[in-house]
Amino acid sequence: MILNHIWGLYAHPKEEWHTIDHHHESLSYSLVHLMFIALIPTISAYVSATMIGWNFGSSTSSTIMLTTESALVMSVGMYFTLIGGVFALSYLTFWMAKTFGANPSFTQSMELAAYTATPLFMTGLALFYPEPIFLMMVGLAGLSYSVYLLYSGVPIIMHIPEERGFIYASSVVTCGLVLLVCIMVGSVIVWSFGFGPIYTH
Image (cartoon, rainbow, N blue to C red; front, side, top):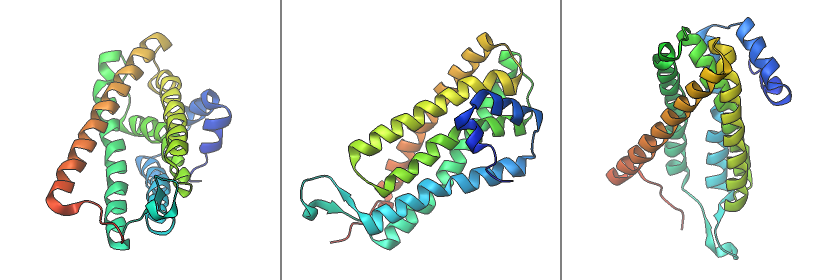
């Protein structure tokens, strides 16, 4: 069943990691999970940008909204960027494995990255209440829990001691930050070619 590990990752994360490790699914299963969960922030962002609007001031006149065409293009771009980012992180996790004495398959690396990213992607639901401070708090909470899942999951999925797993997970976090910077720079470059947001008037 798709998404059948989500509750366990919140309620009893370490036990759920052991369950994931003992019942490895196929790469396609992890991909379907990723494709489904990436829809949450994408659809939420589209609805928020076109139907709710962002309010950075005290009056409704300061509400910012995008045209449906612009929001659709940006949402589709966001969707594939999220999936591509997780794939890239999966590859980097797989590539670094032997350095830390692990020998995972790419499917295991994909499972680790996809399930670790799940809490962060689910924070996209907060976009239905697009208040900047609220979004920052929810985003920070989601990011923190995703990092916790990574640190708790690496030793279990990669079958290495916790001490080595801590260093391994820290390396993955570093790679994730580098990927984030690359995505941000790429977004700026794309926007400079005229693909930026178009606001309603």
